[in-house]
Image 1: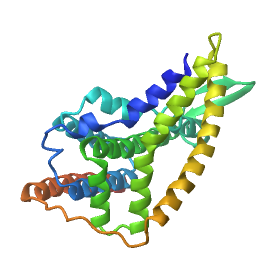
Image 2: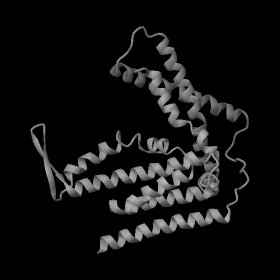
Image 3: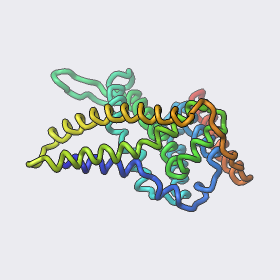
Length: 271
């Protein structure tokens, strides 16, 4: 597999402009309201302790994705792509380590491992919490221009240093994507024979190291250039966005839904 194909894959995940320009009910909601209900959904998923009550949050995100007219396939792909690589690897030991009713045993390297029902449930809860959190943030990114999201976070009282760093990081993500693409293209032009997976991944790791050095050097140059042009700690705030009554009604509906799930889970655990 070509190294350039791997970079093009990440490039596809990074570029979202064709989705944020769609006209839909979700897209037209005030960015501050979107940040509010995204936080409410994530917080609810972290508080709820049963798979049964996490499922409605998944359905809520899917319904909102449909309302936003964003490609459901792309939304699911982007929200799920890294979960098998990271979350599943973390959750897998819980299946064997959490005590509970045994569902069966697995022989592994001369050792018998017992799979518990409580362990499976805890692993599912962790995976679903991560998916809901990533899905909520993904939907926010796909339906709101990043500049508007940063502005909303700033208006909600986030530290100015945080929003400035967030905006600068996002701005240079695409610069570094182009940089790494040029490096990969130059490498392929000098490669005589086709590389296997192992060699490709090793080359990718070396490429990331080179990019890290270049990004550090570029960051220093950009900062020095900013200081030379009079950059300081004070920045001008842009005009605040206005929320409509429909936006507040939608926020109230989402918060009521999240509260209903939380109360139901609370009573279910207490029963």
